[in-house]
Length: 433
Image (cartoon, rainbow, N blue to C red; front, side):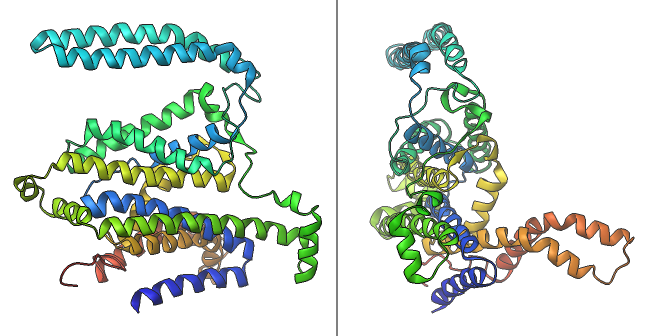
């Protein structure tokens, strides 16, 4: 009953936002909340199931965004002609170098193995750059104001959700093979650093996705609102329900996207619940609670951690691709730790670490407060300072600080929940609960 009341209160908050603000605004919050809930589920799989402290969330979300670009945009024929072959040769060289390093480390031992690996990497680096640099320069010179990159596969953008998960999973596998031997704070530093490397690559490699020049005007899974306004069937529908076609078109698109996002959330939620309540899920929680005891029972902790890390990152990558589906633009500069790391962790902690339902609730609650605080902060400060003199320094300071109210509220919510419900609003179920 408590859980039903919590989700009911969240639904009521969204309804009130639609009633007293606008339904378009409320639906925007809903869609972003669904994406946040999916990201929170991905982090909960890592932290709540296995105790993996990952603060590189934004890197995997950005890979999901990259997948949307490579999926939806049209290929730039001139760029492929100018540098496509060079990029392909550089990729083949890179694969060859990696294969050579793996073979050498299997065949050789002692100091000669380290020396041979070092020489192979250095020689391979220059061989890759020999093909890579001229190719990227040629690609980025092709109409840089509009293109300057290779483009994508011109596929429906909904395919990018699965591709984003695959991109993030592949990166997580590589990161996990390197960093999952570390524990707690060292793992956090490693994942944060690797995430920043991913973001730096997306910002600077313009041939891949235009870098900081951004990509806008992507086509979404729903028709554009302006196209609906000229469609006979939509005009007929608007007339039957007595709605203004211009205002209703935006709401119609947002409702369609919300239904798609909800289907993805339900699908991931069902799989997450099945995994959590399966023998695999019980084993992961046993590893989380007592790693040494699990190892003594013959469990391969590093292998299981890698599985969980890859699965959780794949879920975050799916959410990252869905975010581009909603925004219809790819802007690498917006992938900052505040948006994709701090907030997601607050969602998981406030909702209830180890409980999938808690992560979903936390995703909705925190994002709702985050958005509403931005709109209501200035009005609240004007109300608080209404009785102060116009030239009051305190009044000016409070009004200028209105933009920081959302950060203050995040801290207050986190402290209150940790004080009165340390395990979150919907705590993890245990054998005794």
